[in-house]
Image (cartoon, rainbow, N blue to C red):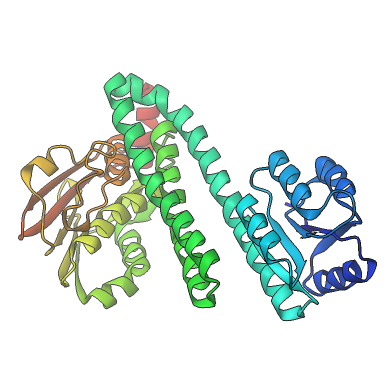
Length: 381
């Protein structure tokens, strides 16, 4: 992505010069136009991340220019510049979709703040659109696999689950953004950015799981220590464990060297442990055991959360099978569905036992295989 581009539209040469100096001090690239007609011609060819648009200009004024810009690009980010006596025009500009306005004569800190907030909002919109595009691509990849594995009924379940998750995320971003814009409070704007960042991270996680589910990439095994994968996963959630007063108890038995895809197995462990963390609202003990003394590697993860009812467990590995049921905060989504598929690829197994108010126990088994055995299996396929 190139440097951020701002278009300054004003018939006053001195006003344009002042604004462009401020933009340069902010490290931004800029272009300028002396009329609404010139701005529209420039915008039609090059577009801009932000337009600073004067309301009062000869010929096509700022409001008419704003209408055309918004028709050309409904998401065009526009900040109006105006004299202090043009309040009615400001109201009309905001109704037409302007992001903000800055009064003349300019106060540099106010101008800089408005420009930065508008560019932050523009980045949020671009990130949202990019995530939606990735989701559409993932859905296209996903549909063929779902039809093959589960029939057309699964498509509706999965599509509804994806839509539900993304509607929640986008709704949170848009709602907070609109509230922050109306209030103009710095604290609320900072809170909005945190909500957006968390929502984007959640959306990326969903898309990542969708791509794994759709592509069914073959595992790339290598020798690794299951205890190291477990410790690395626990370290990612250590801060949350401390905040929730969750005590982690470990027990590693035998030689836990495994020939597997470490990234995929780490994803399995994270999905299970993160679910356990969400379920343990009141704290308690989380026990993780790796027993490699038998013919298979046995991993047991037991929490003291509030547990799940039998009807919830029956569909625990379906994609978004319980999107409307948040038992103890368990966010099922695609996490456990993908985990089950990964273990299937590794010739392993996962089973879950749970009772309401008595916690949940997840048992994972992985076969002990040598590199030569894995190579032989691939050759036979």
